[in-house]
Image (tube, rainbow, N blue to C red; front, side, top):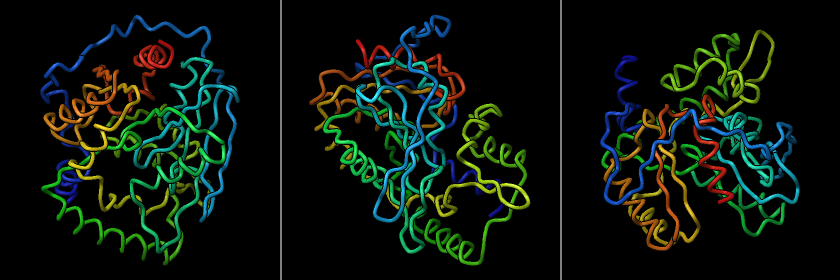
Length: 316
C-alpha cells in the first residue's frame, strides 16, 4: 500500500468521513447558526492566562493536567482529541468566563501523562476512567465538559470494523516491537512541526503547533521525540457502537452545546449525527447545535470564533 492508499484508508475508515464543507447541512428541526466572527467581544471577566501544572496519580502512573481559574470556580473538565494534548485549549480558555475552574487533561498516553504498560492497549474509555479518578481526588460530584474530537466521543463506520481490526492489530504489534527495540529516532523541531501540520490535514498552522508541542515534544540527545505513546498511532480497536450511543444520548439530562466547524471532518454520516442530536433532546431540555466557519482545530487557531458562544452557554 503506497502513501496515497494509506491516506485514503485513514480518511475512509479510521478518521474522518469527509474533509470539506461539501457535506450536507443538518436540518430536521436542528438549530443552525453562523455568528458574525467580527462580533467577538473579549470577556472583561475572562480567565487569567496563568495556570497550574498538576499531576494526578493513577494505578499505573500519573495523568498530567493544566488547571485554570479559581479553586472555587464552576468545575469543568477539558478533554482533547486523539494524538493532541491539553495545549489544544491554551488559546480558548483565557477567553472564557473567570468563574470556571477548568482542568485540561492530557488523557492517558498523551502529552505529559504517563504511558500505559506495554501489555495494556488504549481504548477511548480510558479518558473517562481517568476523569472519574480525578473527580474523586478533587471531590467534584458535579462538573461540566468541554471536549474536542475524541474528547467529545466520536463514532466510526461500523461497516468497516473488520478493516479497523485487521489494520490496527498489525500496527499495534509493529509499534510494540519498535518500543521494545529501543527509543524513537530523534527529529528536528521543524520536522516535528511539519509532521503535525501534515497529520492534521492542514487544520493546524505553525503557531498552533508551537503551542501544542510545548507538551507534545521531549528534548533528547540529537533532537526531539514526540511525548505521546507511539502505540496511539494505531487507531483504537473499538468505539462505542452507534446503537449504544443512541441509548446513552437519550439518557443525558445535562444541557448540551455542539459546535461543528464547517471544514472539519465528519466521523459519521450526517443522518447519524441528526439521530444523535434528536436522541439528546429526549431528556435534555437544552440542546444547541451551531455551525462555525473553520477547520478541525479552529478552537485553537481562531478561538475568538467560538469563545462568546461557549461563554454564553456557561453563563446564560
